[in-house]
Amino acid sequence: MIGPRPLWRGRVLAVLGILLCAFSLRSAVASLSPVVDLIGEDFEVSSAVLGVIGTLPPACFAVFGILTPMLERRLGIERLTVIALTAVTVGLIGRSLAVDATGLLVGTAVVFAGVGMANILLPPLVKTYFADRIGLMMTVYTATMAFSTFVPPLLAVPVADAAGWRFSVAMWAAFALAGVIPWLVMMLRPDAPAAAAATPASDSADEDTVFSATGPIATAPSNRRLFARLARIPLVWALAMTFGTSSTMAYVSFAWLPSILIDTAGVDAATAGFLLSLWAFIGLPASLIVPVLVVRFQATRPLFVFGSLSALAGLLGIMLAPVPELLWLWMTLFGLVGLLFPLALVLISIRTRTPESAVLLSSFVQSAGYVLAAIFPALVGILHDATGGWSIPLIAVAAVLVLTFPAGLVAGRRVTVEDEWERRHGRW
Image 1 (cartoon, helix red, strand yellow):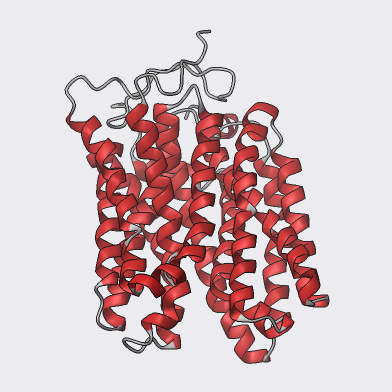
Image 2 (cartoon, one colour; image 1 turned 60 degrees about the vertical axis):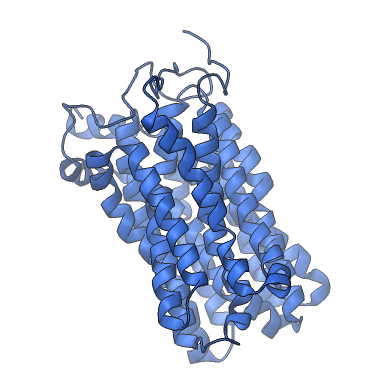
C-alpha cells in the first residue's frame, strides 16, 4: 500500500477552504447572543424573537441537512460549498444592517441556511480530498470549529463597545467570504488535481478506491433509495442519536446556561459569560485528541462513556452545589461533553466507504440530530416557565445523556453502514 502523501502537496487550497469553512460555522452561531442587549438599544428584540433565534440554528440545520444531498448531486460538492459560504456571508452582513427584529430574523435564517449546508458538506469534503489523512484533517477542522466557538463570545462585546454592534456582528463575514476563494479557484483552475487522488493509508478506515469529487458515481442508486436504506440500519440511528446528544447540549448551553448560572449561583452576567466560554473552550483540546484516538486507536466507546458521564457529573454539580467557588469545576466537567461532537463527525467519515455515501450519511445523521437539538432549547424554556426553577429543565437535559447512552455504544462498532446493510440485506 502506498503511504500517505504530505498534507499540503497539491492540496493547499483544499486545506484553506476546509479550515475557513469550519471557522465560519461556529463563529456565525456564537457571535450574536453576546450583543443582543446592545441591539435592543436600537430596536426592540422581544423574548419571543430571541426564542425563535435560539431555535433557528438546529431547525435550519435539520431542513437543509435533508436538502443538501439533492443539491450536491446536481451541483457538485465544491460548487455547493461556495453557495453555502456565500449565504453565510450575505446573512451575516444582512443581519448587521437590520433595522428591526424582522430583518434580524431574516438575516439569521440566511446565515443558518448556509451553515446547515456546510455542516453536511465538511465531513465528505475531508473524505474526498484527504482520504489518506482523515484523522489529521478531522483533528484540524474540529479544532478550528472549537476555536471559533469560544472566541466570538470573548470578542463580541469589546468590539461592539469600540465600533458598534453592527461591526461586531458583520466582521465574522470576512472569514466566510475568504472561504469562498479557495473553492472558486479550484473550480476554475483548468489543471486542478483530482480531489481524491490520495490513497487511503493507516490513519483511514477506508479501502483503496479512488472516487470523483465532482459528482456521484454514475451507477450509484438514487438519494431517496439510499436514504430509505440508511433508515433501516441501526448503526445510522446510533450515530444520529450520538450527534443529536452533542448538539442538544451545545444549543441548550448557548441559549440558557448563562441564565441558569446567574439564577442558581448568583454570579453576574460577565462571570456567566466567562463560564460559558470556559465550557466552550473544553471542546478545543477534545477536538485535537478525539479524531486521532478514534481513527488510530478505535477508542470510540471509551471516549463516549467518559464524555457522557463527566457531563452528567457537571450537571449534577450545577443542580446540587451551585456555589460560585465550584462553578469552574462543574463547567469543566459539563464541558467534556464536547468530546461527543468531534467523535460524531469523525464517525460520519469512517463509517462509510465512499464520499458519496458520506454526504448522505452526514445529511441523515445531522438532520435527525438537529431535530432533537431544535426541540430542547424551547423545551427548557417551557419547563422553566412552568416550574419557576431550573431543576426540572436540568433533569430533562441530563435525561438525554442517559437515554442516548446505548446509542453511543452501538456507534462504536467498527463497521461501515454498507457493511451493515450487506450483512442484513445483501448487496449495497
